[in-house]
Image (tube, rainbow, N blue to C red; front, side):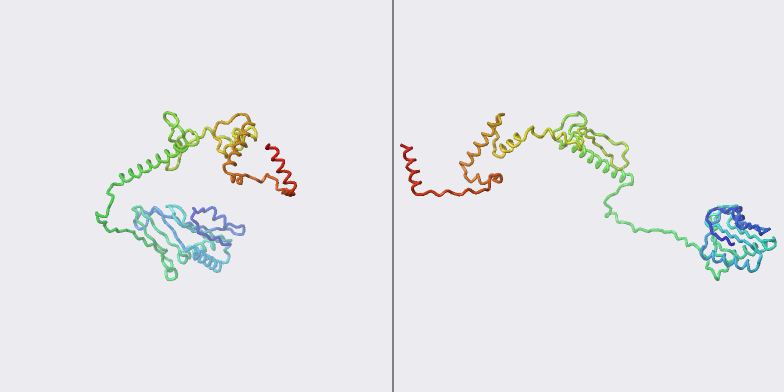
Length: 338
């Protein structure tokens, strides 16, 4: 079985050794490559590894095939390489190979590490104590097959042309500009707070007297919010006279005790009867009737505006009088006058 992996986590020798250990094998050879603290007289504090993982895994698979071809008794192979930052004394690569006899395991491990160094595309960056660094590839790596990877470090600089002085409208320091912005925000907060007070509070906050200029339809209590997380210091109002909208009992005070009172009041309003009215219901009905008769007398067409929907729509047949009946009717009227 082959165990191949690139990992950014710390490598464990015990875990990887357990992968290759087998009941059939009497030997397990392990190689651990660690970060040393010096290179050519320079003090190294850490290494940074990078690799083409897809290409690297294929190269490791090829190495495993070559090992099994050359050392036929090899049972399990594990190649783990760390990527990213590897501090001093920590493992950067662990190779473990198991076989029935120690000779094949040791020789296969030596062949494996040499093959990894020469064919797997891995680059390391040495970081020195003096803040210097250097990217390097393995000396045994075949550079004709795999291109060398490097990082291009460019310092970005932006050059701005000087602005003519006559085009600058505001000349102020950063502190002055921030102070102006803060004062503008404070003024806007005060405007919002005064608007809330004017719209919701019907009394002066200091004297608690009713204000005539207030347009508030409710009488609320001002509560300042100290826990506001916004840029506005919100002044919250609380209505002490709120009512439960689910209950309709408060509407009963506006409904007359009987329907006649409401109907009479509506008729008197329509007829412009603004004078004080009597408490006697019958006298008020008589006044309404007199008012209607008066309006009909001065303007007969006024009756055309009445609501006639309640009148009976049955038509009465006109009576036809004879000449003798008309003469008798006239004679009767003349005799009454005498």
